[in-house]
Amino acid sequence: MTKLQETLTIRNNMIKNRIVMAPMVTFSFHGDNGSYYGKQHIEHYAERAKGGAGLIIVQATSVFGAVDAKNMWSTDNSTSLKQIVSNCHAYGATIMLQLSCGDMDINQLSTAEINSMQIDMKQAAISACQIGFNGVEYHFAHGFTLCKFLDTSYNRRTDQYGGNATNRTRVLTELLPEIRNNTHEKFIIAVRMGEYLPRSQDGIEVAKIFEKSGVDLLHISFGMYPPEYAVPESFKCSSITYSGCKIKKEVNIPVIAVNEIRTEEQVRFLIENDYVDFAGIGRGMLSDPEFANHIIKSEPVNQCFGCKECLWFTNHTMCPSKNK
Ligand SMILES: Cc1cc2nc3c(=O)[nH]c(=O)nc-3n(C[C@H](O)[C@H](O)[C@H](O)COP(=O)(O)O)c2cc1C
Image (cartoon, rainbow, N blue to C red; front, side):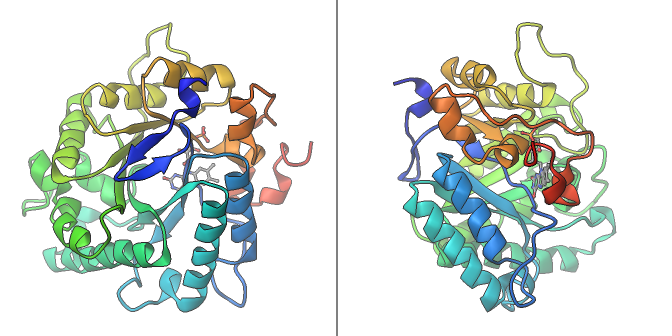
């Protein structure tokens, strides 16, 4: 058995291998009876769980409405999410939900507006736990609302949510004790973030604060922008993936690296060399639901074509990989 198939336990959840399905909104899916989630989503995630993914991170889901059980948190949506969870569990996958706070200008938010958002952030985690998810991942990446708090060049706030790294992470860290008090012992709390914020030392500092405050798992993608540095020639993956490897050296909690990891050689390079704990696979999981099993068994994968604009953003039925 290779390292790829070694289990890794986080808060007593045994993750069966080192391949993670990255969160990806399925833009052209539709729910049932006017709800957001439905049969298409249920099948989509079950196929990837059946395909061997050790950990599945379900797509960005807005926290707004969590307090009133509205929007993404309506009974119909929760029913579909429960089904997604139980199918993935039946195939042996660990499953988390990514929580997003949309795309607001944090410099324009009043402290009261931030506090109101935090109430939804907290409740969304508690609701995800009640639905049966093994954990949540807060979306602090890709330039969205939470990401803007972390970036030193973007965040110009002068209250307790701006300035030093302790303040820039506070939007989540101050919620953690209450989330822990209202979820069970095994509930995983993860953060997806960048390392280049906009300097590596900013990302490292933030990662260490999240670790210290009790975050269980870090998923390193990019922040406001992809990193601008060159990676060593011997490194077989992208600069964003390299970011994950840099953070891994600085913290003691597990780290997922992601971005353009498409081949068995790349997955094994990252995992067998202990550069990171998990390989996060995005589009590769869209083009091949069996990506994880294929890589583990050294079988060919149904390759993602790497289209300039991924068709899954607009109409997944046009994905050339799906149709080849
Ligand atoms: C259709 C699509 C939807 C995505 N949705 C999300 C999302 O909901 N949350 C997120 O953090 N990243 C999202 N991403 C980014 C992926 O999680 C991943 O980081 C990115 O695709 C790079 O990995 P890859 O090269 O393996 O695809 C999305 C990407 C795609 C292609």
